[in-house]
Length: 212
Figure 1 (cartoon, rainbow, N blue to C red):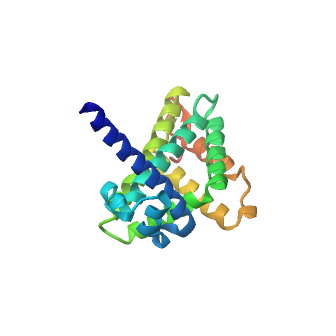
Figure 2: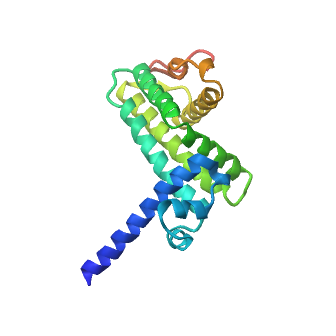
Figure 3: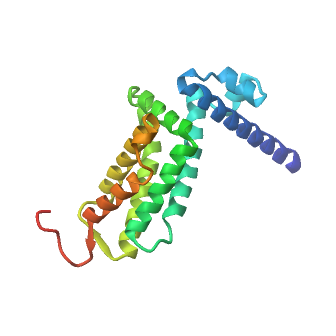
């Protein structure tokens, strides 16, 4: 009885994984709006019934896939930033990893942008989209807080607000790079991010900057 139950769970997990992998390929080819549940199911080797028994539909499938992608990218950014000797080096490492992801997986970033545009127009979907993007800001806030603590710094603005600015910079750089790759040097984000962090931090105990 126990063995059979585990086998069914494993089979269901395998089906979900195949559907998610197929969805990633189909979404990459056609975008969120152009993809169909029929093609995703067929690509995975299942009927649409199998898809609907594991996901509520195309939107739910995309949100689960988005969670996975964000988790993976978050791990890569955290690894690129960790164990570096200065705030500037952390900024450069994180920015370099972001530029690598833009070059390696442009279709994923395009999907995120497409789904963001879709979500902000729909009041029912917007909170779900916002929750996913909040995960990225939470990661950045944590990395900023870790750096401030480890290098004995203070911030001129809250870490959460600085994270929003960095996230916006990353999104903007990605859009520019995807539209006109030659116009955006690979080291541009790292240089700008280092300047931003230098302007927003100061050694602990030195007081607020003049004019701040």
